[in-house]
Length: 338
Image (cartoon, helix red, strand yellow):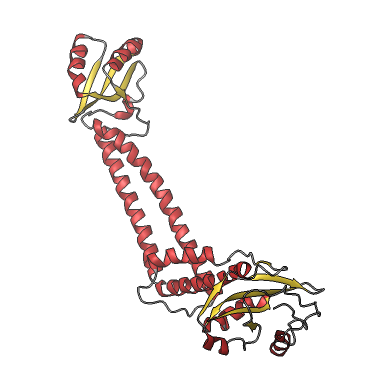
């Protein structure tokens, strides 16, 4: 294994990574850590423009992607467009289902609140609009119901209509004249009566209101299922392109992350921007590398090198001539310390 440095113009880093370095087995190291003896290098801090899209694409592909092995035959712009298109479609379906689920939650709440009183065969909307008689829907523990019956029978001011009994609670509604409401409410409270407020959103008897609400909730559930089924059908028809887009963006994100390991150098009067990558490569691969347009591969010492300074002509190591030969039109005429 040989320690190598790969250097070239920063705007060709992606091309070098994609077209040349990918051909070889190379273990890249963090250039800032490995070349800390150099004086004029800075970290190559750039945000990966593909990472977020690649993450979204992976989530979408897990749900709607092809089960077959995806072939990365899509260019990155098309991949970004496809994932954006799919995400917009998913968001549209989510907005529709969110609105339906909000309505479903409301209707279920109304149904759950009134369903314990189905034995009350009376127009519930009329009860909710009583003026001179106060009404209280609610429940109390079973253990207090016998006491309530004794009190209700002995007191002509209140009537309790039992509607439902379970192992723990008795549901019902009591009526009391408005003038006696404060006193009677206190007595029911002492019996642990929990008042349940019903919205003025019911029509007909409790039975009729429950049937209507059940029909509404069933219809809303069917609409939600239909929206999700339509989305799944549409996206399953795009499964191959979704998988290809996901694979492309994952690949591009991984390539771009190579930049995190690179160091930057600005040299010369025009402050030309260069990069340095470093790492380990097998000796046979080293022989084949370093011949591509756009970069220079240096296999010198790992330590003891001097600052990278193309404008400094005080020293001209053997690497200078090699760089001029490989990259005469773009690379600085003088390369010292590498």
